[in-house]
Amino acid sequence: MGLINDFNRTRLYYAAHKATKKGNYHKTIERYTELIENVTNNNEQLSDAYMCRAITYYKDLKDYKSAILDLNKAIELSPKNDEHLAKRALVFTICGEKQSALNDIKKSLEINPNNTIAQNLLKQVKD
Image 1 (cartoon, rainbow, N blue to C red):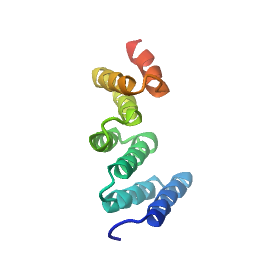
Image 2 (image 1 turned 180 degrees about the vertical axis):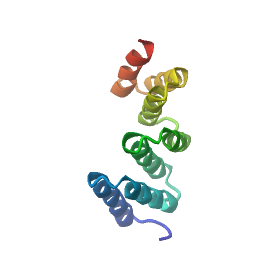
Image 3 (image 1 turned 135 degrees about the horizontal axis):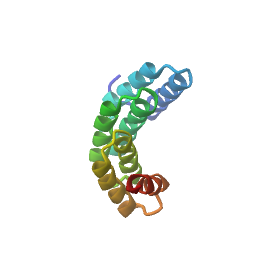
Image 4 (image 1 turned 120 degrees about the vertical axis):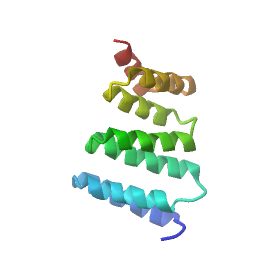
């Protein structure tokens, strides 16, 4: 596809969302992968695409290893994104990696003290 324009990016997000609604999670992963492979020179868009794919991995496919890899990439591209950090903390919590979760929760709350995902995870991890 080459460089991706706004129309094609929107089309791929819509196709991924549609596949998710139908329960075709592997197709969702394919669409996000296509998006990731074609977004260039826009770290925010690329970071969001990794984040969306990570959500499918952990929420729908229970593939936590792949989710963490994608969240690592999303955070690398957008290190000040508190939502990405909170989502990775969530996956770490699911995997029983409390210290890693706590580290991400703290970073997320430093960036945005009002991040409700991080606030709720902090209570959960401390219990």
